[in-house]
Length: 186
Image (cartoon, rainbow, N blue to C red; front, top):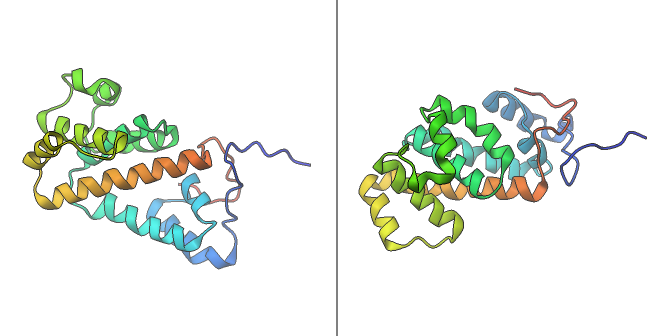
């Protein structure tokens, strides 16, 4: 008997299942492969499909600047202890203009000189939404003064979405070290 060395709480979905082949091909096309997150989500085709569409909109169809998007994703991963999320997004963040110094200072952002006024307003908003859900008026006022209506909605949706991601990842114990033999990889 082969011992399961996976860290995940349940096995990853069988990506060769004919019922989900169209979705597996779409994920592979859009994401370059089936990452661990999607390999778990594929247990439910409707959930995986909705997730893919929503996160594609957040990451690729919004006008929120990529550096702000990735700063909040990295901060959410940090606040929620979601190592997989941080590992996946660190290279994306760097590609969007977030510096390594900013990533390194993220846990101490209020006292760091690595962040400008807009980034500080966005990070304060992210912290409030993630830690307590309720955003104090002064925190909202600062971010409202920094972003137009569309970008404020997109920021809020991004923070909500990536809190969902980290909570799913951590509840299921998804780990990049898990073996996804037979699953197309980027």
